[in-house]
Amino acid sequence: MRHVMACLMFLGTTVSYATRVSMSVGIVAMTSNNSYGHPVFSHWTRSIQDTILSSFFWGYIVLQIPAGYIAGRFGGKYLMLISMATTGVVNLLLPIAAIKGDYIAVCACRIVMGLVQGLLYPSLHGVLGHWVPVTERSRLGTFVYAGAQLGTIVELLTSGVLAASPWGWPSVFYVAGISCIVWSVLWLIFGDSTPDSSRWISKEERNYIETNAGSNKIGHEKIPTPWKSILTCLPFWAILLAHSGQNLGFWTLLTELPSYMKNVLNVDIKENGQLSALPYIAMYILSFFFSWLADFLVNRKIVRLVTSRRIFNTIAQWGPAVALLGLSYLPAGNLSLAVIILTITCGLNGAHYVGFMLSHIDLSPNHASTMMGFTNGIGAIFSILAPLTVSFVVEDETSAADWRKVFFISVAFYFLVNLFYLLFISADVQPWNEPKPSKALEDGVKKSDEKKADKKLRNTGEHKF
Image 1 (cartoon, rainbow, N blue to C red):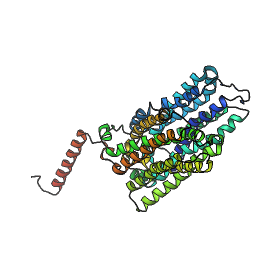
Image 2: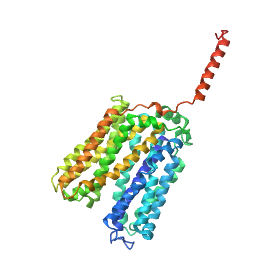
Image 3: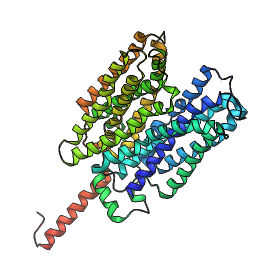
Image 4: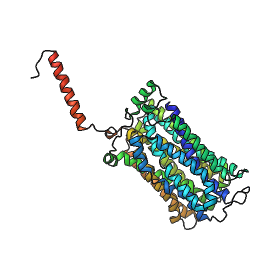
């Protein structure tokens, strides 16, 4: 059943990311004259299009921390259901909103989509913490999160085809919406927050997971969140900084690098759908290799779990840093080498799934959703800062020297946050993972022990004194 759950969560991340990317491709068709009789929004300027594309993140930041807290207290099943079902409905309504309300209504739809998708990752991380045994954590965790790359690949390769079909650009959003609704039905039937609450799981598998996952065996019993312990925990700050550096570097790479390649290297990667998808394909494939290798090294006791986390987080962050430096000094017009470096950069970044992403669960399976909500929320702010950094630093888009400043900022972040991670990360379950017993419970246990001792003394004929 844990494998069924992993497949469902994998499909969830795949569909959710596909809906995020759908607008990136759909907006091109929406503003194009070749739309098979469907409404055309040719009056949308570059500024309006950028506003529409960024509006998703305005909502995405808001509910990250509350979602992590709620999922930690009450479980993630229904938060994930609300997230995906609402995303599906919004996608189905988006074409009508665009026709009736123009770009303002589209922005409103994207903000709502961002709000509800802000519930997804914190909830999913908490569910993973309860369902995945330590020995399978790298493989199943990577499998689930690699759906993000697959969703991006599928959307890049299919949205253009759908938009160019007689069904036109609305079909891009209809397909995305229907996919979300179908997933929501499957999740409602088969999904559960914990093995303890699942009606499909066998008793043997439940015992196996509860023995090896490190989470609360009773399920969700409204465990209070130890905020002070979390916020004063150095390994947690190592995760937070690694997550923030990852988002700044990766989103600078994916949102702004195509502009650099076009304006400085005279290479337009967006003209070729296959080339656009290639970096994501590399990241998707290599993430599975890294996850298998991580579990192999730990389960064979070749390295400790914390050493594995350090190795793969270094590959994920210092590897792209080196590749970015190489790309910033690449001669103009060299398409093949540019695409190879970009593909290697994204491919190496796939190791972060078995780096800091799973460290939340290592530290505290019971509070993984809360920590994920916190780090993902802060990380989302750095995702927004990525394009703003380019706007602030790059005065001449054709100047290689200006773009190098942007790359040096990303390289510096990658280097420093991973260095902090190497120094302070831990893979040990923290003492604050389990709730402290109440004073009444402690007194009860003490009295119970005294009664047992008295009974034993009476049975043996001995006196208490």
